[in-house]
Length: 350
Image (cartoon, rainbow, N blue to C red; front, side):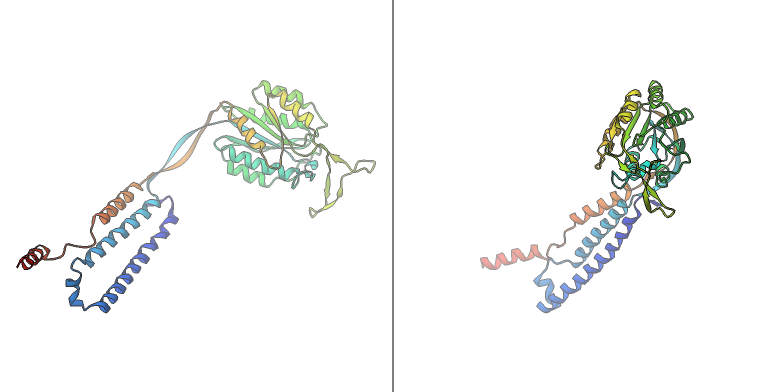
């Protein structure tokens, strides 16, 4: 026997505890009655008292409780593996891992803020196929498109800035890598690219590649992470601690600024949308709304383990015991009441 909620079975300890409390209450009641009157006088002083019925009523209530708890634990049987067809879209998330994403003009820094928003986005895309692409000067398909959102979360947790060998930020390389990733995966549903970056791209022509993606039916949703005012790029030592800021050849500290204009152009060229990253993350809902409007298609079958629920049986038994307990009177008809009443009446007439 399998149980869907086995933790509920712990509450079955309540049944013997309540039974013990009822027994103790019965002994206490008998002790008070002995102090009030002799045992032989009880049938005459309280002729309707039926301790056996009270015990039966309590037993029925306890049985009803036990079976109700068993039903709440969801007994299951007949486990089997079935193939379930999945319908959804393909969403590839591209994350900028260049050194500029270490800038702290958003809390805690650009790359960690991006990862937080990506986690929320992935949680909202359950049922869709998701993937993760990293890029800086080049791009790398870090997590291919998969239905396993939990696996994508594990990949995302390990991402750090400056993990790719080529420095800088090349948006065209990211868009090209996304095109190749979509082409390598067969799917009938809509496709979309979500790009998290500060937008500082000094290489290639990202607008032209974005236009090609839009013509292929792949909108690009760009998410601008950072501020237009900019922030110095920290340089970390071997232990990962700040050791100053990045400088140019003349010794001037380099400021990394959010390039919203480029990100808007990329989004518009692909028929997508631009979303500035905010502290509250309200743009996640807007992105999910955009993605849910895309056409959904077959994503292939997935194996699922199915079991037949059997909670109806203990629930029905619990209901029967409960109603029997309600119908059973605790007190009985006093013995000889029919003979006693006329006799008293005759004495009164006499």
